[in-house]
Length: 158
Image (tube, rainbow, N blue to C red):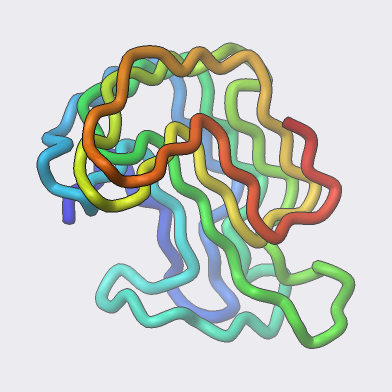
């Protein structure tokens, strides 16, 4: 795998919060289908096993991602929180993340194999905002492709 920026967790109760990634140029190698330009997920830096969050402080929240140029990544931006199925009304989802709201990201040249690729992919987000992003270029290969894919989110505004 290869990530331009990775936003991960220290523990189930210590997520990454209040992080801004802006004005960056990210170019990786999209021939690797695990390549993601900006990656945030529900696991530790030492293992990719999903964590069971038990406190809102364990979420990756208040992330701001804007004015970035992301090219040649299999997927450009991927943000996945905790699958809060315990009836907490999305309290342990990632909260208040913004992608492009304060200035659009320019995403080009992603995907190109048999694996699904995304310009922007989000899952388990509450109060997510996505705006002003430019997703351009052709995608080759036989895998599915989504410019913006919002899965299992609450109060999300693309």
